[in-house]
Length: 139
Image 1 (tube, rainbow, N blue to C red):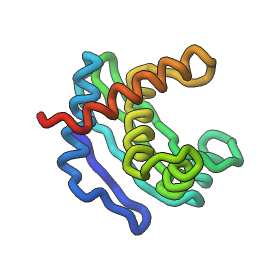
Image 2: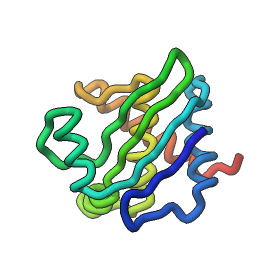
Image 3: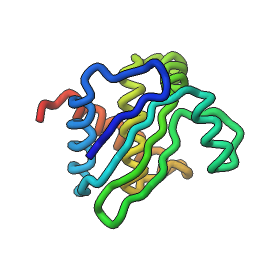
């Protein structure tokens, strides 16, 4: 099951559309779905999590906590709506496109994709682009 939670004045216009899309993303990689929670929050909220759990003192757009077991995907995906908005401006893309990129990025981490090395980042970006295209495909 995919659930959405909001810790700030932000919402998704059609949660079912996003949930169906994330389901397609997960299934397209051959995984099953356990419990995936997306928590949309502010920069300060995510900074606190970054400091408390990862000992990082920096703003970030996403933090993923993986509770997956085998090929069943489960986890918490914290997304700073503030960072998504700023990144959309920085990269000169629309807010929705950047939101989809970050949302897919989190679930790709749950499937084992990394982004620490150049090679991993290149594959992650390719997968993000591929998964964003699935958003506009009707189930």
